[in-house]
Image (cartoon, rainbow, N blue to C red; front, side, top):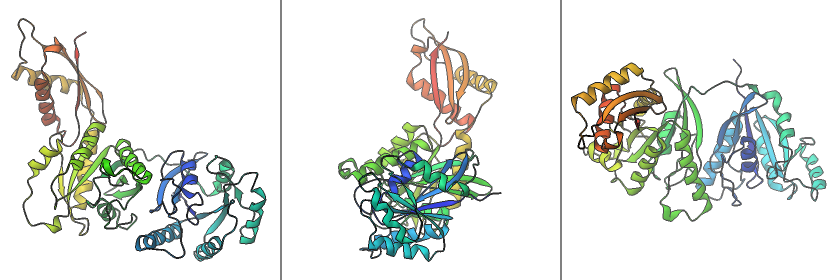
Length: 429
């Protein structure tokens, strides 16, 4: 079986690494900003080019003299990315020309003995002559591009095409997002699941600015895991970085089938927790609830109080976890697999009909005068999540409380704990 190659974009801060990464992906996968050092984590994504696949990594910017502790961590992440790579795209800025930082960073990269391709970014007619100066780096002519203006990208991709392996279909993976307000331990849980420190863990709320997709094999099942940035309170969204992180978290929920909501056992349920839970419900995702940091408490937790405050659908699996001590991690994956199978459930039409007949006959819907609702038809019309069409004659007199009764009974019968059940009520034709 061919191994999918890993290609990492490297260079000093603000030479356009994230812009190139986004251009290749065709979507805003990494945060792009004029603020140097915006990309804190090494982001990765599966990509294809001419029906062949590869993994593209956007490393954090390499700085030779990191100014603070977090920047030093980013530096280590960049070096880890380089170490794992099959090829390095060394990105430089044609506007600036060769800088001492470029030379020193290249010297560091060469220590890893990787195939290096020079990529000269921000090339236009005014600075085309400057691109010739980069010959002195000893990497040949390089590939000239403008990531911002989408110029030269096809030439770049063709230059590395020989490394790509045949694309493999991974649509069968169980994809879930890790969500929660800042500092509840999302990254720590993510790291415990993956088994390494792929995401930077720092005690400052909101350290994880971007989402990082990773794949994991567990008990012969493939999972695609999305570690999201913390969702900020709306009053704290002044900076563009925070804005894009929130948008990305919302996007991560919508792009996954299951959401792992992480809450902090040492704190009360907050409005932010409730808001995020509401987003999960509105998205139609299945859900598993992780009550984290149990190593820091010694009191019993009122589960029903938490469920009531979060206004979740019945039966959401609750896992007690400690990301630091790796407690409950296997149970997270086991329950996500179970919830995912419920999320994709396909029910025989005869089973739906016979069970609905029993549900309705055991508790008839109230009449209004001579207008009595009665069941005429039922069929599953969708899954991910399960969706059932139910027809009544005089459906307008079916009260919302009776619809809730039907939903609750169907949930029990078909064991739909942790997933939404969408019921569409229509008038009989």
